[in-house]
Image 1 (cartoon, rainbow, N blue to C red):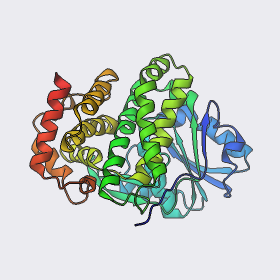
Image 2: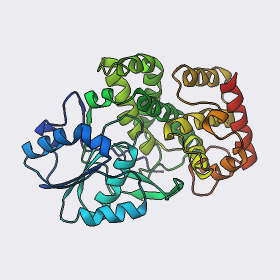
Image 3: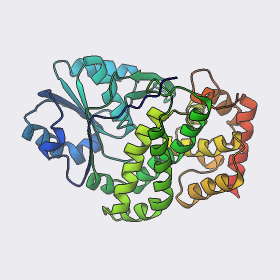
Image 4: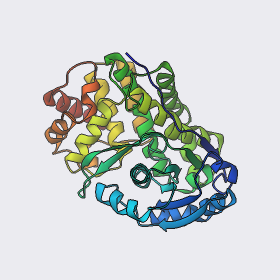
Length: 354
């Protein structure tokens, strides 16, 4: 049994780090291709371009219409990026995962610049790819993690607070998925079993959401950067990102895939947070833990009952999709059937409704 932990080469977080040339010091390339969503680039492109140029890199092209991470979009953008030796992905999970796919295709270095703290994608080497209808379509595994992850907390705090909630939903689940994968001895995306370091990071991501989530949401509702915001952004991005990738995923993310396969298009973090409650029920965890997680999800509005998610009539479909062979349900310590998964979903729904 081999334990393995992987992480980005450099993680830089703080106010106004995007136009600081020191942020990009680990890069060896000289020609950058910048991609992202239109809104994300409107908020960050000037700072990113200035920082890159001050660090000695030229920006060869900018693509601002990245709104889906599909194999088709990765192929198209890879042709646009031809000749660049650095890909800079700016935005949320879609843009960042697209950037990973493009960087892998053209063999370039990668900089991820999250403009929202809504997922734990920025630090990882794996990209989740969807089909044109929004359903899960596969992964791209980059050979290495990003060379630089640049997180400007002033940009994060200026985004709508709901994005921070989505990220906390993802980070909350990391602890329990890593615990499940460690108990079963499952391999993580890093290519080995969980290290103790990954387990500690996953546990800390959960603790920080519980202790600082409410204060951080209050701050970003006023576009303020406080220590609580810094802590939660780091939990959502770095702790959860390294934790899940080197610790392993399990039922919570399997349920997330089940939701998307049933045509449920709610944000990833909401679906995974719901899945985390269902996972605890599958594991017959102690009542105190289940109650605490349900309370945190309700108090911070991290997820909602099935009817509000638009999934009340899709439980069986979600359960079958979650138990498919290509999900991480198999990383649970016990075998899970679609009937068991459906019962857990219904019970999680009842707990959230009460």
